[in-house]
Length: 153
Image (cartoon, rainbow, N blue to C red; front, side):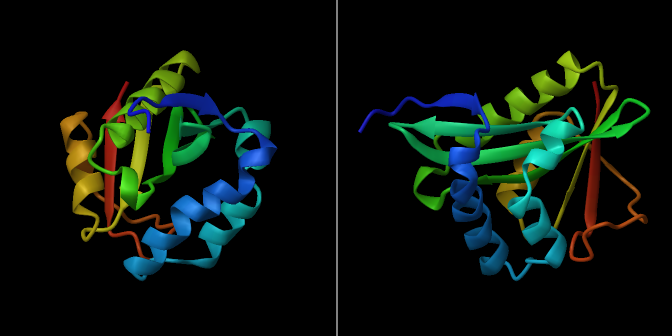
């Protein structure tokens, strides 16, 4: 197997891959909410609103993903950040995070937001390494998220 991967934009033919990546970790950590299923069922809504859905692909297989939602006023949020278990700790997550930061900057966004849960230690470490700062979190869209971080772009 080739160890290289590429970051690509979402295409409808990859829709099932979004669930294949997200559902295992959401279920493992008991974090699945109805809003998650809505996002995975309609990824095109992020594109229509000007955002992006970025995928990591290796040997034709989608192995990681991240969604970028524009929220207005120069603020955007990275959502559904995940990598298939067999491909973790190989730089895929970091490449996806860099790609979403670059995409947000290219769209002239000023602040990139992530929300998470304290149990997702690997994701939190990546956010911290990229310079995200913890901020107060009160306007919860995901009821099971208990951490909010922001990166000034």
